[in-house]
Amino acid sequence: MTTLTVALLQLAPPGPDLPVNLALGEAACRRARALGADIALFPEMWSNGYSCAVPEGPAGGDVYRHPSLWDGVRTPAEPWPEPVWLGEPITRDSPFVTRFRELAAELEMAIALTYLERWDGPPRNTLSLIDRHGRLVLTYAKVHTCAFDLPEAGLTPGEGFEACALDTAVGEVMTGAMICYDREFPESARALMLAGAEIVLTPNACELEINRLSQFRSRAVENMTGMAMANYAGPGWGHSVAHDGVAFVDGRSRDTLVVEAGEAEGVYPAVFDLDALRANRRRETWGDAFRRPAAYRSLMDREVREPFVRIGPDGGPLPGRSRP
Image 1 (cartoon, rainbow, N blue to C red):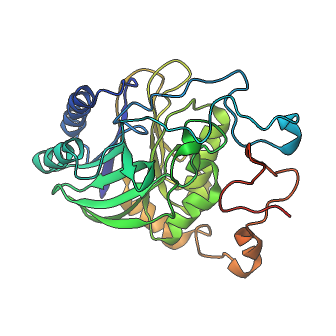
Image 2: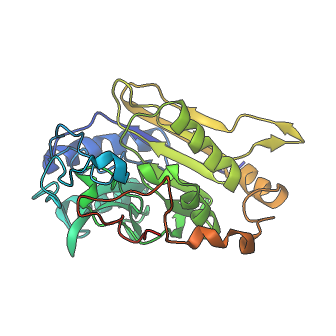
C-alpha cells in the first residue's frame, strides 16, 4: 500500500508576532515529521493568526448586502475600503517564508505555509507549498475572500486554482490548495480536480459545524479527491478533518473519513491510501468521467440575479459581477 501522510496542524491562534509564530510553527512541523508526515498543513494565515485589525461595528461589519438590507444607509460600520492588517503582509522571499523553506529541506517534509502576502495593492491571503527539498512549488491566493465583511473585503482575491506535481518519498502526487471559504463553492474543488489534483490542502479559520463539514465531505466524494483541512483549535473551532473520497469498495458504501480532530490543540496525521484513491478514480463514476460541460454554460455568467444581488456602500456589485 502506497500512503501519503498529511499532518493537520490544529494550533491555537497566535497573535501577529512573526518571530513567535515562526517558532511555534517550527515546533509543530517537527512534531509532524516525528509522526511520519509527508506534508505539514497550517491553518489559514498562520503568519498573523488571522488576527482581525478592524473591530466589528454596530452593523456587524457587513460590506456587501442585499439592497433591501441597507435600509437606505450606504455607509458601512467602518471606513471602506479600510487598510487591513496594516504592517503585517510579508513577501514570498521574507525571512519567515525562507526559514520554513530551510526547515522543509532539513526535515525532508513538504510544508503548506500560510501567510498574509504583500501584493501590488491590497495584500492577499496566501498558501505557499514548499516541497521536501525546500523549493516553492505552488503559491495560491484565496479566490473566495470573505468579501461580505471586513477585514477580508479589502484583500486582493486570487485568480484561479492550480495543482502541482509534488515530489514526495512515494513519488509525485498532484496537489492543489484552496482556503477556508473556497470550500463552500463546489467550483473550487471541481477546478482543482480538473487541474489534476489528487490531494487538496485546505487551511481554515472559522467554526466547523455539521453543514461545513458535510460540504467538505461532499467535495471529496464528488471529485474522488483526497481532502485535508487544518483549522485553529478552540471552543467551537477545531475539527480539522480529512476525507479520502473513496465512497464505495466492492460495491459497498464506506465512510470516507480519514481523521477528524476534536477542539483541542494538536498535530493530527491523515494517512491517505494513494493506491485506493487512484484505483477509485479509474473505476468510479464521479470526477470528470461523465460530466457534460456544454450544459453548464450558465456557470460562467457574471450577472447576478435576485435574490442573490449584493451591493456595497457605493451601490456597486461585488468586483467581477454585474447586475441585470
